[in-house]
Structure formats: C-alpha cells, structure tokens
Picture 1: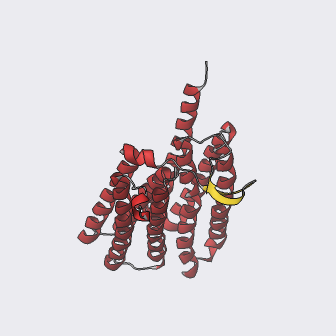
Picture 2: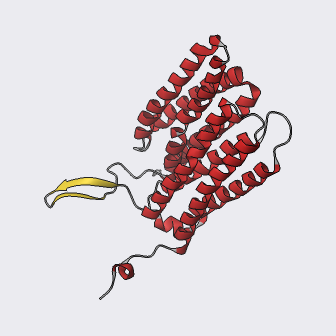
Picture 3: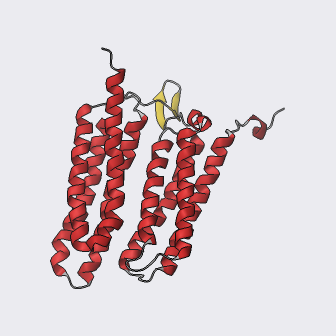
Length: 286
C-alpha cells in the first residue's frame, strides 16, 4: 500500500530550484534594503517610504512562489516585472545624493541583480519550468454534482504571454505613482503649502489609474484591439503626469529615482501590447 508521500507528484528539479531561488531573492531584498538604510547619510521620510515600498517586493516574491508551486501561467509575467522593478527600486536607493555609494550596498545590489537575472532566466529559458506553468486559477463551480472548487480554463480566449506581461506591468503604474506622491508629501511638512494641490492631484491620479488599468486590461485579455490602444493612451497620460511632478516636487534626483522604474514598466507594457498585436497579425489567415 502506497503512502501519500509516495503518490505525490514530484515537481521537476528546475521548479524546485526556482522556488528556492525566489525565497533567497525575497530574503536578499530585505537584507539589501536594511543595509541601504543603515549606511544612508540621510534617513529622512522619503527614504523611509521608498525603502518600505522596496521591501514590499519581498512579499511579491513569496506570492510568486505560490504561483510557481501551483503551476500558474501568470507566474512568468509576474516574475519578469517583479525582477525588473526590484532592480530599479533597489538601485535608486543605492546611489546617495552626494558622494560614492557604500561598498556593502553595491555588493548587495550586485547580488540581488544576479538573483533577479537568474529568476528571469529560469522562468523564460527552462523548458521544465515552462511545462510546469500551464495551470489556470481555481474557480467555484456549481453543476449537477454539487458545489466544488476546481481548476477551469478561462471562458475568454487564452491570452498570450505578452498580453499577460502588459497587464502585470500596467498594474504597477498606480503604486509607482503613489510612492513618489507620498514622498512629495514631506514637502508639505516642510512648509511648502503651495505643493498641497499638486500632491493631492498626484494621489488622485494614482488611484484613478488603478481603476483605468483594471478596466482596460479586462478587455485587453479578451483580445480587443481598442483595449491595447487605450492602454497605450493611459501609459502616455501616466508618464505625462508623473514625470513632470517628480521633477518639480522632488528634483532631478526624484525624477531618476522614481521616474525610471515607471518608465521601465511603461516600456514593458507598451512593448507587450505591440508584440501581442504582431503575433496576432502573423497568425491571422491571409
């Protein structure tokens, strides 16, 4: 008689290596941020907000571990955008306003970058991992046999990997706008009351962006061409709001630290939409 352990399906070694690598990356994110905070010459409100946001990515990697263990298709685009934004988020905190970055911070950043590159390589270059990430989200099903919770393919046509990547990248727009807006809130505490309307507008735009992206990507995954165009328009609008406000309220330093991650996410989202449209055109009958 077989035991439960003997009948359990063993995951491929590449998948087990990926989950271990993700756990190490999550821990490394926290360690590097603590080092950055410890060695930072200015431990102000802005650094605290940026550090807290960067540390939240460790929870993102833990969430990604769950998707990988369950074999979810969303794991690949989620891992890609997590790796890219993590490198940008940590990199912007390494460089001080003046002087040379501390050696421990540089070493930690190099280690974290290597871990993120390894994560992306396993997600997109390992055939064993690709063969494992094929499952869809479980849903509540009511049929003749009763009520059950089981995996079902989506009712809509299966979205391409590039559309999923665009969707995940677009979902980062709102937090990438809200973080610098909160940092700019420190200007109000310093007596710059003229910044109050701009900061409130910035916060409102960040919240509104989350709803716009949610609406747009719902139709994007259903293959609507107009949704791809709308996402590009939203992306342009987000950049037009965020980048000037970063430059005005946070200076060139804030423009680089907070604008660069948003530009990277925007570029990935637009590139994914264009690649998905190109693949669809090539697959269409002539």
